[in-house]
Image (cartoon, helix red, strand yellow):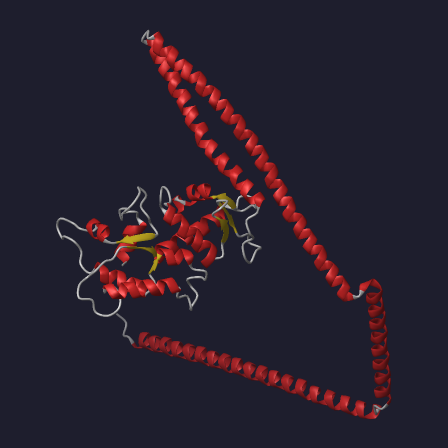
Length: 411
C-alpha cells in the first residue's frame, strides 16, 4: 500500500478519465492493473488483497462516503451507512471479508488518507506563514488551488483532489470555512476557536484577490511580448524587410495599449484592495475594543463601583489600625509580667559561658604556641650540638696530623 500511496502522491498513477492525475484519490479497477503492468514482471498480483487490507484499516476511504460524511473521519463512531452497503457489495464480490477464491479488483475511487493528511499539513503550514492578515486568509477556489498546489508538490490540483482537501480541512481539521456555491475559502484566524462563516464581503475580497493574481502574469507576458516584438522590428529593419518591421510595430503598439490597460486596472485594484484591507483591520480593531470595553464594564460592575471600593478601603484601614492597637496592647501587657532579675541572671549565665569558651580557645592557642616554641628550641639545640661534634672531630684530626709531623725524623 505504501508503494501505491507514493505513486499516487507523485502523480504517477494515470487518470482513468480526464487529463489531471489525482494525488489524493486512487481509482481502482482494470485500468490500474494495466498501468502497473511491466514488460519484465507482468501484471502485479494481489492488488485486490492490498486494497482490501487498506480499506479495513481505513487507509483507503471510498470517495463518495468521504465527501458525504457529516461527522469527522477521526470520530470513533464514524461508520457511514452508505459505506456499509458498499462493504457488503465488496464482500459479495470477494474483495473484502472471507477468503476470496481469486484476486479481484473492482472499480472504485478511494481517498488515500496518508497523502491527504500530508497535503493538509503542508497547506496549513504555508497558510500560517503567508496568510497573516484578515484579507490574506480569504481565497477563491481558483486562487487557493494555484497558491497551494506547489506546497503539496503539484503543478495544479485536480477537481477530486481539491474537493477532498477542502472537505478535510473544513470538516476534519476545522481550519477553514468554504462555500462551493460562492467558491470562497477562508482560513480560521489565530484568535478563533472555529472558522467564521463565509460572508458576501469575503466573496468580494476573494474575487478582487483572484483578479489581481490573474493580472500580474498577464502583465509579465505582455512585457515579454513587447520586448520580443521590438527585437523583431529591429531585426526586420536591419534586413531591409519593411513589411515585417511594420507588422511587428503594429503588434507592439497593440501590446503596449493592452499593457497600459492591464497596468492601470491592476493599480486601481491594488489600491482598492489596500483600502479594503485597512477597513477589515479597523473592523477587527473596533470589535476587539468593543469586547474589551464590555469586559471592563463587567469587571467594574463586579467591584461595585468607586464608592464601594472606597468603603472597602476605608474599612480595611480601620481593621488594620485595630490590629496595630491590639498588638501594642498585648506587647505592653507582656512586658509588665517579665522579672528583670531573672533576665539579668540569665544574661550573666550566658556571658559566663561565652567567657569560658573564649578562655578555652585562648588557652589552646597559648599551649600550641608554647609547644611550637619548645620544638624550635629543641631543633636549635640539636643543631648546635651537631656543630660542636663536627668541630671536635676536626680538632682531633688536626692534632693527629701535628703529632705525625713531630715524630718524623729529620731528612
